[in-house]
Picture 1 (cartoon, helix red, strand yellow):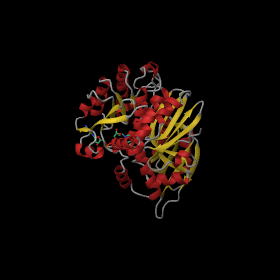
Picture 2 (picture 1 turned 180 degrees about the horizontal axis):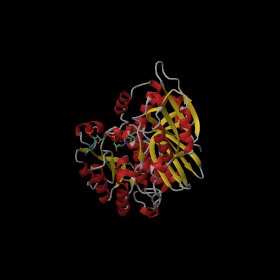
Picture 3 (picture 1 turned 135 degrees about the horizontal axis):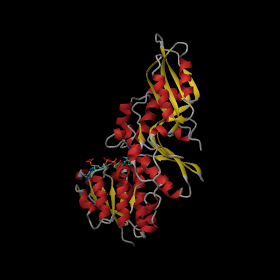
Picture 4 (picture 1 turned 90 degrees about the vertical axis):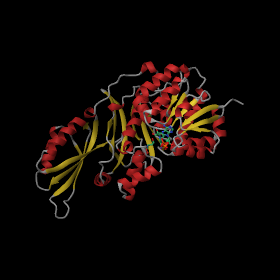
Length: 438
Ligand code: NDP
Ligand code: HSE
C-alpha cells in the first residue's frame, strides 16, 4: 500500500468544506484513480471551532495558515481562503518550500499568475487551478490538453454563476436585482465582495486565465475590458426577448488579425443558441478551434461540491505527477514557458461587434431619417429596427435598433452623433450582440 500524499488545506469555507466532504465521501474511488490515498492532514481557518466541527476533530486545525505552508509533512497546499494579499504570500511561500499548490483563486492568478508560475517553474512544482474557471466544468484541462491540436480562434463563456443566476431569476420570476443577489450570497455562489460578480470583475479574472491558456499569452488583467450587469434594465431584457435574443454576461476572447480581444459585458445572444439557454448558476463555455470546430462545455459554475470536484481533480493530477520529471508535465499555461507570445491585446475601440441600441426619441416625422443617416454615414448597416408607440400621454417613444457588425469606435461616433440630435433625449443604451456562429 502506497503512502498517502499529504494535503494542507487553507480555508474550510464553501469550497474548502465541499473539498473536505467529497474527499472524505469518495476517498476509496479517488485512491484507485490517484494510485495512493489523498489525505488532508492539516486545516487552517480563521474560525477554528467551525473548522473542527466540519472535520469532526479528525485532523489538526489552526488559525495560522503560514504554519501549514511550512509544515514539512505537507506535500500539497490547497489555497481556498481567497483574496490576493495573504493568499499570494502563502502560495509563493508554499512554492518556495517545494510544495505543490492547488488553488481556486482566479483573482490571484489573473493578477499575479506570471510571478507565481515563474516561481513554480523555477522550483519544479505544480500550481493547479482547474477550479478557478467555471467551477466544476473541467475547462482548463479541456483547453490545455484536450484541444491542444487546435489553433484556438475564440472562446465565449458564461463564466460567472452569480450573474447568470441573477439574470435568470430576474427574467423568469421578475424579481428585483438586490433580492436575487442576496439569494446567490446565501447559496455560496457570490464572491466575498459581490461587486466582483455583478461588475464583471470575477468573469474578467476567469477570462484572462482562459485567454492565457488558449493563446499562450501572459496574464495582463488590466487589459481586459470589463462591464457588469448593474446597468441592465428590465426594458432592455424585454426588448431583447421580443427580438429573439437573451441577455447574458459573456466573457469573450478572440484572436483577430491585429491581436487578441478580451472583453466581459452583457451580450445579446440569439435565443436558439444552446448557450442562450444556460440558466441559474450554471456556466457554459464555447470554444472554437480550427480543427475541431465549436465545442460547448456546460456545468455548475459555482457552489461547494461542484467546485470541490475541480479541486480534487487537480489533487489527483498532482498526486500522479508529483514525482514526474517537471519537463514531462503539462505546462502551467498550456504552452512551454519560453514559447509565450506577445500578441497585442486590442483596446475595446478596435473590437468588432454587432450592437443593440435603444434610443428615446420624440415622436415626429424625420427622426428615423436622421438616425439612419448618421448610421449610414459611418457605414453601419441596420439589421432590425422596432419603434414603440409612445405611452399614453407621452410624446417620446423607444426606438430599438440592431446593427450589423462594425468597429466599436464607429458605434461610439454614431452614439455621439445620435445623442446630439435635438429629437433624441437622454443617453443611448448600447449592448453588444454576438451571434456565436460556429
Ligand atoms: P469562503 O469565504 O466560503 O471560504 C474561505 C474560508 O477561508 C473561510 O472559512 C474564511 O474564514 C477562511 N479564511 C479567510 N482568511 C483566512 C486566513 N487568513 N487564514 C485562515 N483562514 C482564512 O470562500 P469560498 O470557499 O467561496 O471561496 C474560496 C476561494 O474559492 C476564493 O478564491 C473564491 O474566489 C474561489 N471560488 C469560489 C467558488 C464558490 O462557488 N464559492 C467557486 C470557484 C472558486 P472566515 O469565514 O472566518 O473569514
Ligand atoms: N462568484 C463566482 C461565480 C464563484 O459566481 O461564478 C465561482 O467562481
